[in-house]
Length: 181
Image (cartoon, rainbow, N blue to C red; front, side):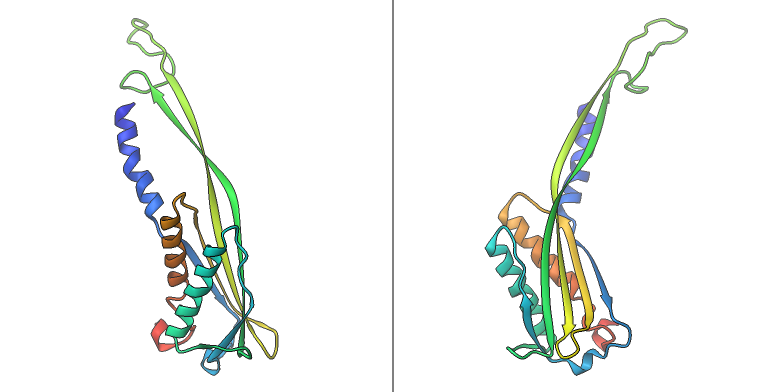
């Protein structure tokens, strides 16, 4: 049992340290070279207003690093949403002989014994940030980015996940630019 637990600890730590999963999508034919300014239509509403402020600050920093400026009459309108949901995993650990941990064991019917199993249910939160960009004049969607990750319990780790997710979302932004290739 101890050996199994010792092997699982590094795997669980690696899973916790992983970066958020991100996806992006672009409206076909969109020429991002014509956009240089943006405005916020809807800022993200979160249970933690500091996390919402961090998201806005990180998105602003990413767009400004790409040469965009925030203005009241931006060419692109940003809309951000945050959602969380609970997920569960079940891990079963078996104890018993070295040949396995369940069922009857023995050679030729001698020395039979029963192993046991213990199942642990782990409940955790998964958070998703969706950032949509709309052409302000046509009101048509031009870009969507999403970042999804397990929500850590510590504020410091949550902030790191927000920073990493938004940075990863903007790696190839704007689409079609020389920087994204």
